[in-house]
Image (cartoon, rainbow, N blue to C red; front, side, top):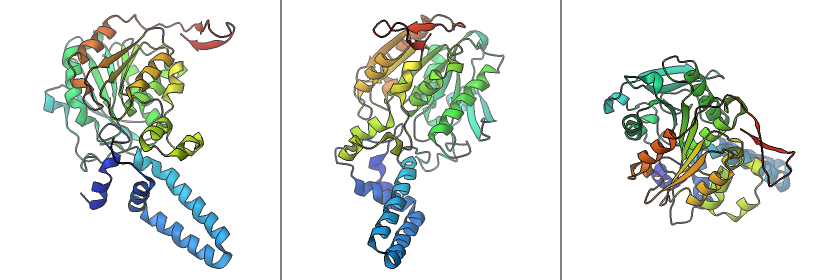
Length: 361
């Protein structure tokens, strides 16, 4: 591990975009990270600015430098969000479900834009056609193999099938991560399940933790998926990346920064109003990364008629799944769900104009 990597461990944590540190995270650290990761581009911008300054004056030189470095900051936001190389061998070594004595298929399929995506399909050996099937969306760091302990619990305690998917640029999947790319990958995984004949396609539900919750919300909010998804469970999920940046970084300038300046937005609070799939929002009360009140915001804004919020006492961002009532809470929520509705009808909010369609159920 290099000295630079050690310096930036404070900025990242397995499962999310930022770690919580008592010390202030300032622009100096961010600039050092960018210079380390993008030093070739940064040096080009600096030398270009010097040359322009020498021949054309300070004003134009300053403009070139500002525009160039702004472009670097915009594109470098991916370095502050996606962490597929944590630990360093996460792109080469993915723990197999067989290590947990789980039956599985290792699958590689092409997404709609041609990127090859790696997945594990863990199927119940008996009666797979009559049990629910979960699509598991992991967090922002590492690979899906690092979540197998949790998945083993789902498999044995909930008696379900599970499709685990690695986003592009993670694990053994090809490509590079991006917000749009992750959404495409999620849709690809769902479409794949809808083509299988050995599962109950009327009982497919989404599970997403942290960043994975934002991916699940986007998938469930799409009109084409609303009458196909059975349920959604999101855990320790944020309202949006801009909201998290304001809370964690505490830079005053972010209060006035236009949304367009954020390369990755993941506007979950806005999208969840279009979610009509039965939804369970799970949050750990001791989550030091995503403030628990964000879970309540998502719950209240969710457009589903059937929705529930469950707080796990003592649960942190990474270990909520180890809480005592975790699996039983999810199981009870799923047991009481109605079958998938094939009919989508308008739902009106009585608190606003009754002639205005708010969302669809």
